[in-house]
Length: 298
Length: 225
Image (cartoon, rainbow over all chains, first blue to last red; front, side, top):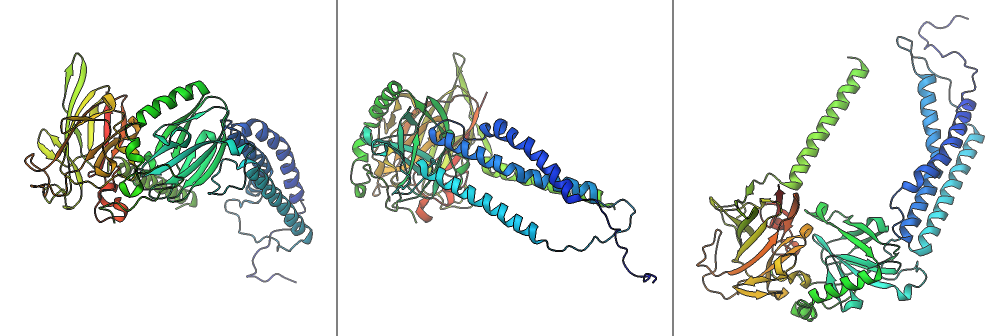
């Protein structure tokens, strides 16, 4: 029977097993790429090993990057193979492909594999998060308490438009615009704000916690050896958000003691004012502050 | 036109638009079109010395701004008082500051910022009297350059003071407080400065309008070689 004159041309049947080719190429690429990524790229993923929590985050990033490498390889192989094998030649007629029919085996395999991966990553992430808090803000009642949290060194982080300052309750409520921490100590950072929402991000320490007005957001970090780290605000907070950064440092105990003595001496001139009751314009140490609206504001 | 050429043109147009937007945002968040005033300096033993004189006023007035009721800094230039807050300063210079504050007190949200710091001797002269702290509740404005560690607060004019200034520029015959201090510029750089007192009358928490607009209560020190 002759073909109808207006019928669309149909691509001739292709007996090549493209699926097998893609799978083989993907397996080969994944077997090569995954260990390379895990061994050579993983350790260089931020935040590094500036603290126990930062080290944990780097490990988590390493595991997850290794996990997604085969997925990325599959996409890359599929894309490149498709471009190479199925692209239309110049001046060739546009041909319709064979109809796509469902395949229960592929569908089942897809659901099982992706479910296993997502569930594993969810379990892994939850375990890493609960182990020691992973440097994240946990609110006023933390549930992921690291060992020895009862004796953690307390430091308060105060955000305001547009600078972070730091108070040390164990040093008489001394406040400084420098964040200095002793080495090899568990530190409890109490993050709060005096105005809008900020986010305290001590990059190399692997600490990030929102600074909300009236809230004591606690994040734990185990410092390691001497370190200079960057502090940035990670929440868009107004005109100078991009300039809301400074540096902090982790120092040996003797150096910390010397710095603390100097900072306490400098603070002495403002301490009598700061220790007045809030309704007299003071701000004695507290885990959060709600300054009265100022006389001219709002 | 071939599809490839079309794609190339679209990509080029998107890239060009991105670059233009980037420059615009960069300009907006750094200088915002504000003119930069280069402060004259003397050379003393090869060391640059600058006299910086500015005033803070409760209302800038119609002569210097289209927002006459906004609180503002005003700098003394060789052409008189100007509302310019981007200042060019030499690197490694000594800067003697004279600050005339004609505004009343608003109070600081954080008392710590009432302690002068980052300046020579960590103290200021308030109406010729040395002070290493002012009452945070009496703070009217601050001059702060966080990247240089500089914070200086100025006390306000008493609410019942006579002969208060209406609009800038304010003559010294109006009620005012005089604050003097000295600081050193360091390496060349682009350092923002700001007021920490929530002093923007009529704005939510006192932190809108002039507090969020370069040319009023914020600016830059462009430290150059």
